[in-house]
Length: 149
Image (cartoon, rainbow, N blue to C red):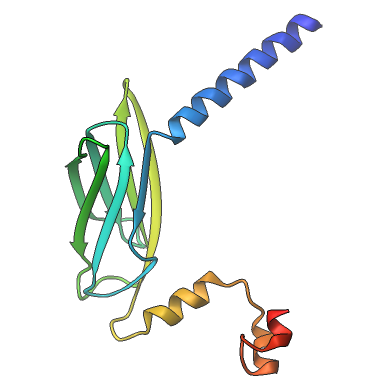
């Protein structure tokens, strides 16, 4: 019985270590979470490897951008691209990947594209959530002391 427990412990420990090391291989983010059609998006991140593959997928899963970048000496990378004026509205996914010792390491982030002319700040605030819409409506403002409490 103790041998089975020992083997399970070794298996769980080894899986935990490989999972943790894979997650630290690459980071990726965008400068904002919401963009209008036609706006520029800045993708930044850091990677253990020099060569980074970046893919941006629209809400339907179609790749709208595929690039290979070189990280600087500190592992930092950035890429700027412009969202098309006629881009599909919705959530976009940025996929960044590297290969470390024949093992692909992938990290993703998302951003939303809204219609040109729509207030980006309002959409970002609504997406962030956390507040109570009914309470805000009842007191007239999310800054009312009753809601802040």
